[in-house]
Length: 420
Image (cartoon, rainbow, N blue to C red; front, side, top):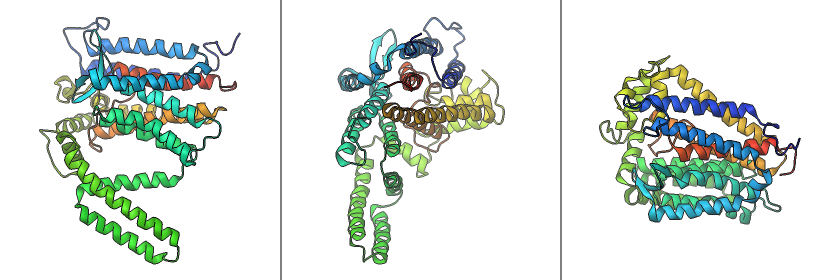
């Protein structure tokens, strides 16, 4: 038997099982969140849970097709896939449908919509892996690092223009891929410092923040004044920080939409708006808390039944899990996500091909970012930026893009002993 074409050859069934478990959990929670007594069927395409049923079927077909493809086909067409996704991101800016303030959707007819930004994450992951695995490419070199940033940055800019801040931020997760491939850990530290600086620049006046930074820099310079290189670096860093602080204030006051500013203010404790912009998060926390240890039971969530939480089948699907399944059910879902991410990293590390390893880390990073931010949003630890919970939230584009992310790695792993 030809190993390359054998469907069952060396497939990692642990990953497949976790994937199927999460899809199943997702469908049942969507069914509970939007159950319409008028429509009990799941084949009529009249409700979100009936649509999601068919999206899952379509995703499984996509998964099987990926497993039957030649691995070299996936690698070779990475630039083409990326190019198509960039083209779609440009098209959606012209003729896209505006949903929830974001012009991010292409209507395909029959109530079906395509969200190109979801697929752009997958294609960017593919092309980044293709580039970084090329001969003579080193992420520690300026040229290679710049090209890698351009691959990540182009779709980020186009998605930001929609404007979809949530999907834009997901691309930041690729920093973990660059770090795995040799990027200095200082970049992670600097990223954390700039996030802290961003938050403090909103909480306090620019002059106060700059004054504190200047004092810290001055103390370091006085302690290491004989190290001229360090002194120059600290002075340059101070200049960058000052520019960043004022840019944050400008972006916050003149670029962000009013509802985006309010969401940030609520998370930071600047404002309390439980009946306005903070309504979703407040109701979500009530729903999750009311589930207690074991939950209220399937189809018995009062917050769910009476639609107190908007977007409960999409961005806030986790509050349905918390209310009906309780802390135990929520912990089980988090356990499945943890197992999936660790499994993807395990698969990535055992690859012989650099392309497969880099791609695997990209897939794990994207899923990790989605899970972390989505759940943090539902419990009030992060602003509402509107990204789905992988494989559980309602949506065909999201489900199929995550299916591609996972099953391309499963396919590459099944052929890891060959040449990719």
